[in-house]
Image (cartoon, rainbow, N blue to C red):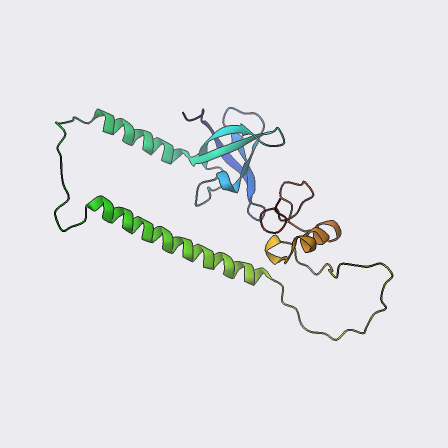
Length: 199
């Protein structure tokens, strides 16, 4: 049984961090919403949405299963129209022999389109990630004195995102020592939890 749905508007969205806040229609505090709960493509600011409310790990309310209000309304109208349609006695139908039913064809086409869309999105994300990497030039540097304190060999070089890291140790070093990094979306002190520092 689905939960109670509420309505509100997308108030703010942080694309780089993958989260935002929904302002409920009835007033009250803005609700946190993560990208994984949002429809695709992402809604625009002030777009009317419906959502369920759940408690996060931190005990705070958050929006879940977010949908566009227009999609919910059109689905409800279709359900009502189907329920009101007159029915005749059910007929047993068969797909023409030697042919494929239209439903099977539709499903196959839908799967092909979804697969092509996934491949295109994957390539776009890969290209976008490669373009975001800073370009470095080779400049000879005079050898420095070896320090008594052992360092992990990392240095702050302008990288800020998990997609630019190569290990959990490197991401942890950047989070603790470099300004402006964007690798700890839930602010628990563990960077890149989905890519490098999985538990």
